Length: 228
Image 1: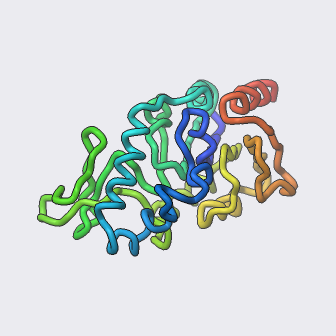
Image 2: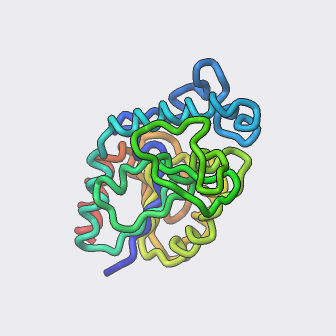
């Protein structure tokens, strides 16, 4: 089977009702999102950062995968599908996709502030001050904050470099280093973009744009690939 690699972003989950930073207008309770998604914000006010992610986690638990997520699972019947996602939600997993790499971490996990290799699943939606790892250090959200390195990037490059079909869903391709992954797509590989909004790589010579949301767009992709 051909290797189909998907790069998914916030627009992938928007149809499930998850609010993106852009939809928030870059603000949360009149705080700039950088204040609650950065190492500086964490050092300044742990309680506020934890509350922000608790709200995101609570919303996620009330949310279901959409037709786009399920459509990618359907593609596994005919393709070897690998998903590289910028999203921290677990909607790809809950839909049933079998190969997912989270570039920016996972909302339903916490990790030790003393040892980044100590990662824990969060039961429910609350992570609070005083919740500690086995070494006694405070747990923090297992997400990549603004200004932090992206540890999974090298693995993502490896996956993208093996693509025979490359699909971008719901990302503006303005956020780096994730947007730079397109530079690792092999030269002869077709590139599909599913997004109703303008994307930064619209003029790419091998790009085929499906100007729809994730749900409808993935269905169009399935039909196009079956015709090929």
